[in-house]
Image 1: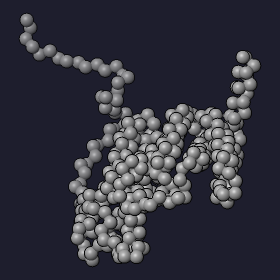
Image 2: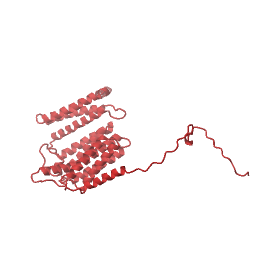
Image 3: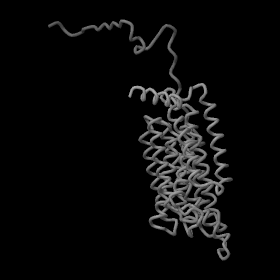
Image 4: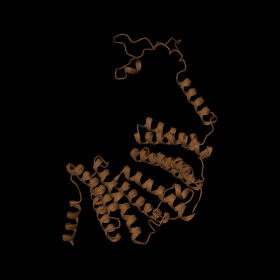
Length: 353
């Protein structure tokens, strides 16, 4: 029994990368992942599905095993460990998709997708398969985040959970409009923001990644609308699209974009700022496409708000009160002489008793 324990610990020690070789190992994992992606694309039909699954499973197990065994630095995962965890999770998701293919998932059959199902782009990916594979990936990524304090693993878990939610809606309810998906994305973004507030004090990096995931969830709303408008434009009898989003959802996208830019500027989070910019660009696109040639209502409202904010910030300032006279040399205020012995003499002018 003791010999088996020693052999097991020795095997784990082999998977624990030395700190000075961590960047080299991470670079090798990235190159390996790219090579496996090309192998899957080029040899997709030349070898069996079981062999594909075996290759991806072994690669995912090895990369994730090395990433999970790396030692933390100052209670934070080093950069090379984050790279190993990301590449390992990507390989794991590819292995899960191959497992679904081996179990009989109808890949490539091209389920007839209409409405929101088409704009969600699961061409060749059945929603049921996408739901359970994404949910499994979210569970593994969440466990890696909790066990190794990895913020990027939490981001992957949040994204995978969002994909699983949308795929489950398409699988269970088969909704043909974008309304249910929009409300689901809004609810997901709200939950992620509340979770970031709970983690802001003790895990600020994790809180930032939850905000990034919320920004991605909101960004999907205008992207779905733009995809539906593009499909209508390219269809034979579709014609030019009209308004892509109702006013409420335009307001949601605008508020999310402004909030992300403000959060990224105040807390110095570049990812949130970039996502805010992407949401604002998507807002401009969905509002401009199919709109009438008039300033009503969004252009006029935003122009007035912007000019009002500039005027409020640049308004004339009232003069500040003059500074107090400086103390003379050797003189200090009473509060600054706490270490000195202070004697106060009081004269008693009351009549004798």
